[in-house]
Amino acid sequence: MPFIPHTESEVRAMLNVIGVDAIADLFDEVPEAIRAQSLSFVPSGVNEMEIGRLMTERANKDGLYVNFIGGGVSEHHIPAVVWELTTRGEFYSAYTPYQAEASQGTLQLLYEFQSMMASLTNLEVSNASLYDGASALAEAVLAAVRAKKKATKVLIPTTIAPVYRQVVDTIVKNQGIELVELSFSEVDGHTPIDIVSQLTTDDVAALVVPQPNYFGVLEDVDALTNWAHDHGLLVIGLVNPIAMALLKPPGLWGEQGADIAVGEGQPLGVPLASGGPYFGFMCCKQKLIRQMPGRIVGRTVDTEGKPGFTLTLQAREQHIRRSKATSNICTNQGLMVTAATIYMALLGPDGLHRVAANCHANTRHLLTSLAKIEGVEKLFDRPFFHEGVLRLTQDPAAILKALEAQGIVGGIDLSPHYPQLGNALLVCATETRTDSDIGNYATHLERIMSRRRLDPPCAQKVAG
Image 1 (cartoon, helix red, strand yellow):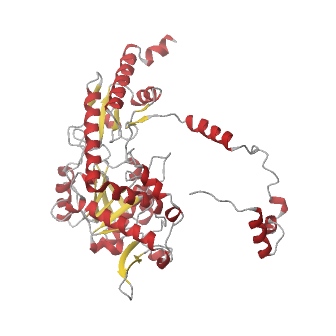
Image 2: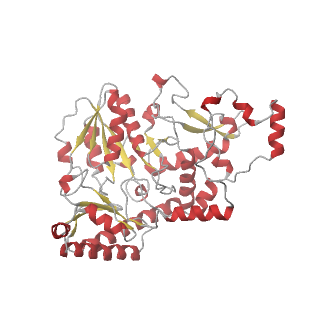
Image 3: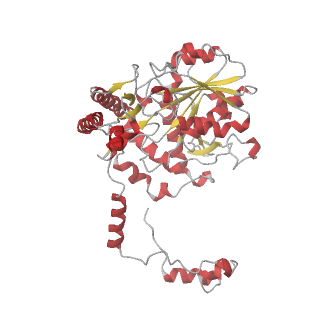
């Protein structure tokens, strides 16, 4: 949105109406002793051409890398029209519709977003977004515990991203909720039903089921969902929204479907930008709607029968007593949701399906190409979506550093969080990766590993 500064005459007119001589007079209550006297460290102003060159030089220092990182967020093509519309003033400046009657455009967009997410997950209700995917999972855990009343434990597989598990633990641990971590098969990379079936379900409220999981592997969602419901547990699906265009949605898992679905919405039209912003989504069955945090927009008619939109549920601490609020994280990501809604409307079901299919095809090509290299093997032999795990005969951290020097961000070193997997590397390929990108990665990885085999780092240190 363009910035239009006030003119000197407009500023003077404002000051005259207020009845002060200068803008500095508006801050006369600030003691002189604590005022900043000067900003000597700030350089003098430069013209448009000079500032453009400076910003370009600084941006170039980041470099241009070909990205093979996933791990919860991923690089996707975003049509130009998505953010061209998202950054229009009507959307860009509209944050929270406190006065519903004056925010019909924003409310309608949120209603459309909810409708699309409910359709994508095949569940009955969607909220208008949450802070991010990790906190959305924490909110789902809290909702499940509230719904089950006296139950205070939740089963959470270790095939869920480590940062998600850390965030959930931080949010729920001081509320008397225990997270019981479930181990996974080191052969197949999923949580087998025979591991889960050995557990006691006393005082357990819910089972979290990722699809796909952190390793990119597909879980046996039907068996896990049926087991949980047979033992009186709720099922929380942690899903990738792009994958839901290709895979069975959580509302159809097992005989009854998942009760709650959450996830990270970043793949739906939000660019990667140094760690954010992101947005979380949450959908659920109608019976759990009163446990859903955030806000819900409904469609109604006025006294003249004309359609309109309004906030129907908003059980947040900004609206009710803090102790009664379903959530004390009072941030919905309205701008990111705007982009996601435009993105989904633009692509439609067929477009989302093609994006998901291309992601899977590119990842198959990537894993096959890299596994041909001596010292590299595909670790898990199970269906996957757009990520996969490779095991290397060399240190992944050193390999990734060498790849970065070639302009390739090669993946995520899993060894800090999953040491039992050895030298494991998580790689990802979305629809943005080309055959040339994948071939280039394979060529450099083979060369780097070959060179390190012939001249290992330990030999270099001894020689030195």
